[in-house]
Amino acid sequence: MTDRIDVEIPVEGGISLHAWLYIPVSGQGPFPAITMAHGFAGLKYRALSDYAEYFCSLGFVVLVHDHRNFGLSGGEIRGDIDPWQQIADWRRVISYVESRPEVDPNRIGLWGTSYAGGHGLVLGATDRRLKAVTVQVPTISGYEQSLRRIKPEDRASVEAVYDADERAQLAGEPPARRAVVSLDPEVPAAYRSAKLIAYHELFPLPEGVEAAETITVRSSRRAAMYDPGQFVSRVSPTPLLMVVASHDETTPADLALEAYERALDPKRLVVVADGHFESYTKHLRETRAAAGTWFLEHL
Image 1: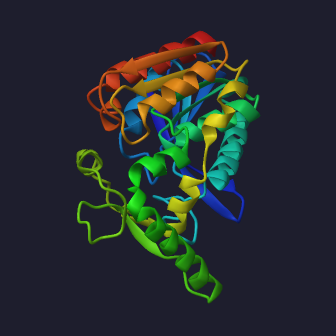
Image 2: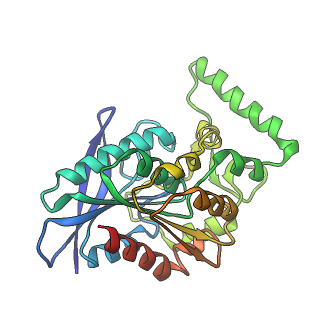
């Protein structure tokens, strides 16, 4: 059994991140803890409670936060994504987890997925308060992903959009925006993915929670500049579990498998024979069990 409460975590800029805190209702604390977050424009309402409740049932305090500018978390430019700001915020979240009386501060792990899986590599390599890390279908190289997503003949026009946005901001305009996902080629969007649309439809948001329907254009430019895979060999000696989807086209599987080869021990690889979004749904039991086993072993 678990007990979940809503908490607000203060971060830089005078804002707070909204988070769910799960506390085991049986057993003797202080407990080991896991801090969790979703990926690019992702919200905790979309599948993460299934993971958090499971981890809590194993005896972990679990904290799941939404990034600034999303969901019920603060932030003035909604849908604006800066990976390094998200990482700085996550360090503050780790400090908050440390401070909880229910938590053993020497047994904290991190679970991150997709874009936040990339954050997990960076944090695992640079924050030794973490004693175990799991990254699921992680971003390895935003640059390589952008090369695959954008046709060569379209790259110049994409760069022109980025540059025009910069000039407009200098003139006092707000950052330009685009849809998170659309199948309409006439609608500027970060993703053209029917699977992402179907994934969102599986997890309707509760009343009062803002849907992340648009993001800033500069978020996409930052994503193309973000290469967290360069940190993978530095995660050791912190134990690293990588969960990879063999048919992943969102965060390409070949990039993740190559990164795993560069990781040092202790490490473990779990491969699910499916795509990116199926790792949260069809393969939920498999992926959360793998992470639970890893955390039990190392926390």
